[in-house]
Image (spheres, helix red, strand yellow):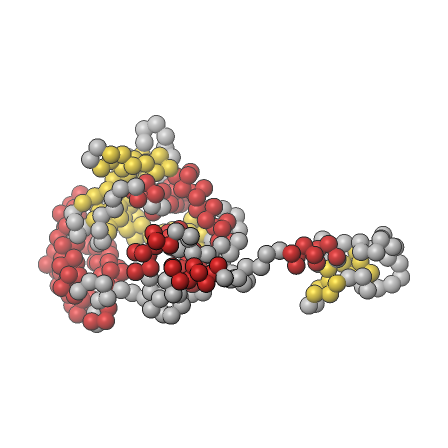
Length: 326
């Protein structure tokens, strides 16, 4: 057999194999890279590959659905938050929402009165909040939001019958060699063998094209159907502070399509399209595409709410994108 580099027979002289293509080489013909050997071709290809400015990295075993939305809004934030582990600390929105979710779960599992819930929220949670938690909203404004959310929750509670699953966490596989996506479903009810999904929101109601572009509804429906092997009939978002709902109902002509009707407008989501987009996002992530989007003017709100500037890890989209270009 001939040496791949010099094309002469590999005889009694010591021989090695290329670590990439496994071709046989004379040891003196091989290019040593650290503790491995490479042929001329594989070494050239490797050295000509564009090197990522973000270096080597390891993807986590799973990511939350919100992490995928983070990447869509700002890949660099995903890199710093998910890859490098600089998670966002709790703020008034996330903390109040999380604590209310726990109480709502208790109320569904083992009924408690509205008065008891308000007392529990105050004594168990609210009184422990320090003033530095309130960065974006005042303490009074958040208290009003919490009380409005509890009031609305108790108007819909009687209609939430036939519990199938409560606060169910699911890890769903989207494709080979990419992290599973983690979702937590607030409530699933069952009617006539089909599932209805319910999700509580303590923030502002979703409007406009975001209803058809946000990935929560399609990813959650996909994960629940795959996990329980049951059809999902509907997915309802309850915006408790504003006492409004957004309901996605399965289309009669295509089980992959769900329609949300708001006034005279219809907004559609397609499960297949959403999964295809998630796979595309993971493909970009695996290629270390963490650059800030070019149209930084659209990122004003994302930067305003981002914790990374306060941690000194990012200079904001305008300045940071300039650094990444140079």
